[in-house]
Length: 62
Image (cartoon, rainbow, N blue to C red; front, side):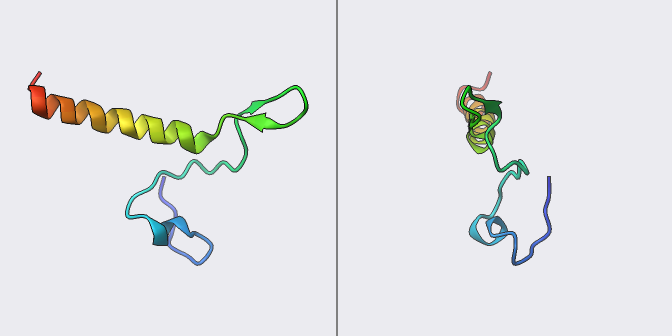
């Protein structure tokens, strides 16, 4: 997802590349009404795994 560069979008100034999940709360509701599971952590793990697989392919050649 691409968001336009604006004063409201601080990530566009802080990072060269980022993934916008457009979520501000957690994903799973808890028993007390709060929310848990941070969406940006899941997006980070997804990107990490994709990069790791590419590096392994370059190094091992499989």
